[in-house]
Image (cartoon, rainbow, N blue to C red; front, side):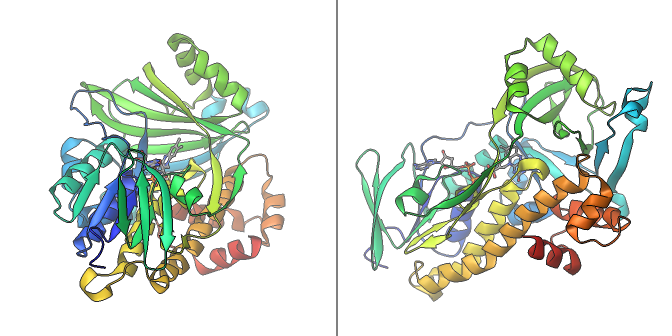
Length: 426
Ligand SMILES: Cc1cc2nc3c(=O)[nH]c(=O)nc-3n(C[C@H](O)[C@H](O)[C@H](O)COP(=O)(O)OP(=O)(O)OC[C@H]3O[C@@H](n4cnc5c(N)ncnc54)[C@H](O)[C@@H]3O)c2cc1C
């Protein structure tokens, strides 16, 4: 595509867009990256970022391949060796002395050592990942960063796309990748619709400083009001830190958001299980709408979507960016190298990408909903077994363990019987 100065424009240098740009540049493509703001550079002694992600072993391997993982390790991250999920009992047992501990029903726990691994994953601040990717892009000759810049209009013709940026600059490329997140402008300009389900519960994230030592476990407790999760954060400022995710009704979260810090800490102590190290401070909190949304198509003409622009998923098991990295890896693989492919916007290339990723993303969305129901104490096991076609209630624990491993990114595939069950249920 010699008439274009760039072969591919990636709209959005979030974690997914930036990683994809690096993978495309490694394939010899000339890439333009459009991003409204430079990511914030993390500093050693700053308090942890509110936005963090549990990165799976698969994401670690992909980021290592792109050459960014060592820089992320040098900044900071928290590996975890154990992962636990359980449902809190409701009713009289829960109010007995020590009942909260006794009441842990159906606890499913994984230990890296027992699975023959060093760790199950890492909790990484989004700004650490974004900064490492941003720096790496700056060192790559095949990448031009347009920042601050944002996409305003696009016009497709048979052999290319003309992009207009907010400052009036225009770019001509052969392929546009929308990596501009859940409210993707690229998706809207390409005329791609979505199916959306707004979950009743919403999520609030709270960073806490807690009593040492730093934890190497991430856990999630299901309650009738919504799950409560703990993610370990790296030590910062000489203290131990954790990220809490509190799922609840929007009205409850409104109250929590408005509370003074002391009252919020008291509410955390009352609501979270005894596993939680005593919180000493809660300096940062934020609320996030959560919805399941899936683009009707991943590609339209010479525009293709990746990451949250293509799908958002319940963050329950923290798989959003892991799926986005899988999209990026698949698209880069389908695009191949510039010397072999010629035109990156060929319909067959984009169709191959969509054929690979759409069913996998759909499966994870369904698995997430199944994961929720398998631990939700609003659904009794027998009823659940019948609804899910599991035959016997005794099969619930097996399904629960395997779906948890998949949903949490420990396994990359579901056992065939559960995968076919999910397809039938969907
Ligand atoms: C509470 C919560 C917890 C989560 N926890 C996890 C977790 O533990 N693990 C996990 O894997 N995922 C998690 N996720 C999901 C994860 O954060 C997202 O899936 C991920 O950030 C999506 O990355 P992205 O690069 O696709 O999009 P985004 O991060 O949204 O990036 C989009 C980029 O596009 C840019 N942009 C926007 N508009 C334009 C425009 N017009 N022109 C150019 N650029 C534009 C933005 O500035 C941004 O840089 C969580 C989500 C929530 C809400």
